[in-house]
Image 1: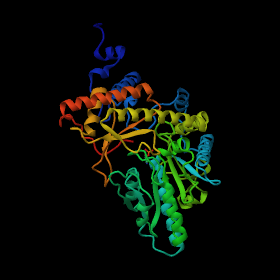
Image 2: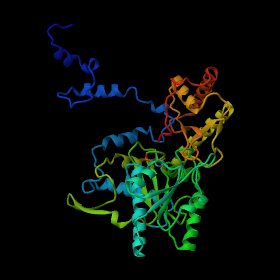
Image 3: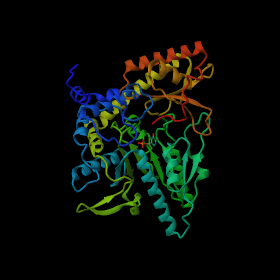
Image 4: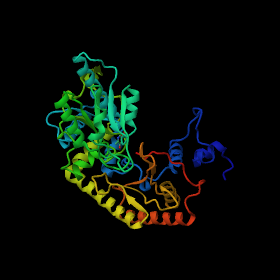
Length: 458
Ligand SMILES: *Cc1c(COP(=O)(O)O)cnc(C)c1O
């Protein structure tokens, strides 16, 4: 080694000093490091994160085309909210909204917005339900202190969050063993004059099925006729909004149904864009409560905003528009069909395994396989999840169903664009091997068993 160099000089010359030092993780660092060292430190930190190719848990996009990645990379500086400076980005958002409104059969001109994901879209959509209800009540000089919202136990946690954050009583229809979606008979007893709306799910996170939206719509249409109660229906299409139009185009769940007033969808799930994009689409302009739109004079131009956040990147809006023009209906249908075929291939292999039963594989469903053990084993679904992860690194979530079906344990595999038939075969073989290992040792040892909570992963 060159004896003329001090330790600092050597570090400067040979780099990678961080390799023998703790990563800064508390006090704000006094000094910095070279750009190369900082980049390598972050890369090293991330090396042990989950591998997206073996992640069967997430609904969120983990792969996009290089051309889309280029658009994203080249536009990272663009602040979406700055409409004065970036009016074309705003126009591309409007194009996406018009295309989605068309896909969802909006009867005429409508409105909507890009959001950070379905969670923000649901907060905004539900706020609009609350404000429209207040308007209706005030017009009749009736009290507005007890709003409620009706939904099933099969919804995403964001609906409970909305109710707590914005002071609305949640009226939650419990699930039952073997019944993991809700229908009109479940909704009816909960609806009254204080109901701001009903939320129905298209593609639940738990089993990938849809609530009986046609039935719930009919109930609400009848209520309007019989009792004069006009209760709007919001569809949580976070996942299903980009699956049903392409796999089940004749199934009615959208604005073809009279009481469906708003729909949310996650662009970063089956919209096939990286995380950070969701959409809220109203049936008609009048379904957006005007009081929630802010008009401001910012950077010299009057602008209307309906959003919980302010500054955010434009890249994912551009990437969504890229996907719409790149794939069109035909391309999306082709990709969704491919996922569905592979999900069916996995499902039939799991049936052949003999240890499992499928959950609702004969119904309209997201491209996933939800399954459980037949119950004759000495091990449970959590053991299978643990063993498969230990042996092969697959992340296959196990979880319990929401109340009142908490005794039911489920395994769920998302089958996305990145899971080829070859991978499906390997996965099915690995599940088989995991079952054989568990059979030999009679379940996972308690010390091995990862304490997985009831979260199915999103
Ligand atoms: C994922 C999901 C959400 C939340 O969506 P984000 O885009 O992650 O904010 C809400 N509802 C359902 C049904 C979901 O699957």
